[in-house]
Length: 386
Ligand SMILES: NC(=O)c1ccc[n+]([C@@H]2O[C@H](COP(=O)([O-])OP(=O)(O)OC[C@H]3O[C@@H](n4cnc5c(N)ncnc54)[C@H](O)[C@@H]3O)[C@@H](O)[C@H]2O)c1
Ligand SMILES: C[C@@H](O)[C@H](N)C(=O)O
Image (cartoon, rainbow, N blue to C red; front, side):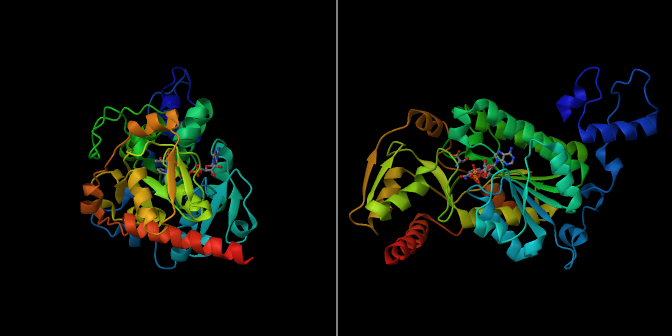
């Protein structure tokens, strides 16, 4: 929105800009030239989280036991969204959590709770959903990931940057609490890599990374400028058993389990020594809920690294071998993914998340491997029995 607001000679066409314009017009009198002259704080437009006293219990002030958050998840049919919906539905009730995407949901997801079409590039559609469903919390998961982003830069730019602008505006306009995930990919070759702290040089070399740094900065700016309750975690590579990754650099660490049990072999597209931070999905989703429920005064920052473990393909293969003795891994390096991985953190420093809101992971490498193999093993046994 800020780009549109500052565009010379126009009032901008964004809804927030229009609202601000109306309010500014009422307060200041409309300028004869029709151009933008003032930006009153958005809290003039209604109640904002900032108006709650700093010592208040933020969570209970906004939501009583019977007044649960009403949640929208964008991009919910990807690797992480369905798991997040399941977790939030257990906590807030099935009907209080709406999953959305631009793809058609499979039957079991469609019948497991509210699902709605939402294209984040369509602002009016987003606003209609937020208003009609009285949404109070938004988890913004739509994105093009690192490898697919490099294959289609203009689409990644539209979804990850223009789409984010729509999300920020709708969240600000309707006083939503907003979660936007960032990533280890928001760092680049000039960042310290071992470990990577929260605050350091961020010069990523992918459109995905650039768009995530943009999201972090825009969210923090909207927080300071308009009081938007923006919360952001930089996720490591996420490993899940019952959902497929959407085209990232860390995808190998999901696929390896499936192949190990299917045919005892796996061809890895990264070099054996490529070390990256990783996390099991249950830890990732729990961290997401925890940071959303954290008292605002416990958050010394709005964007935090979170971490669990860090390993190479070689380390992972060794751990798989303990359970599948015949397992064989070979390497056929994908130069695009390898260059991306070589520019990313090797270890992530998440001490601020641990200190501020008590972040603690449950899964290290051995538990991760056992859990993943148990899941795929029972899957394979069911398939064989049928
Ligand atoms: N999976 C990981 O390892 C990981 C790690 C770090 C950060 N993240 C972040 O977490 C979020 C979710 O990741 P994921 O792995 O589930 O991603 P994914 O690629 O699996 O899913 C993204 C979803 O976005 C949807 N989408 C694309 N264009 C859209 C549009 N115009 N409107 C609405 N939806 C659209 C897609 O249909 C897809 O279902 C992303 O923001 C990602 O950057 C993921
Ligand atoms: C790390 C993360 O952002 C994603 N899994 C990717 O590799 O692109």
